[in-house]
Image 1 (cartoon, rainbow, N blue to C red):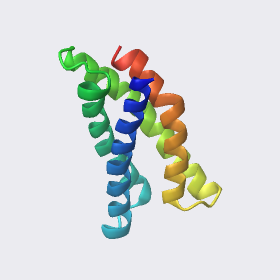
Image 2 (cartoon, rainbow, N blue to C red):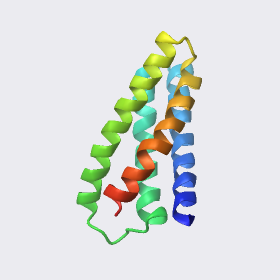
Image 3 (cartoon, one colour):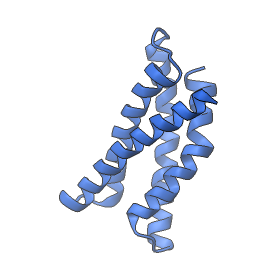
Length: 123
């Protein structure tokens, strides 16, 4: 249970980085919301990997290159699920990108990311 709670704290921290970068990209830099979403997801992914490796799963001495390859493969799925979901919710359902991102990222975080991080990347 402690690992799950630490993983959620790491995800929350990474999500904050992700959201801030996305909103800055869209609202301040006037970058298209899907491009900003990818930038935010990338920065959030880097944050999440670092926290997961060093704090959540405490795999500091594990093979870094193997973990990075595994993480990137899971992260690519995450980007596809997040961008696809944000696109559908924003363009077809009519929900503003920020709320679409919130809905999709919470769903993907609980159903996809945690289990793959625990069982595949940082096992």
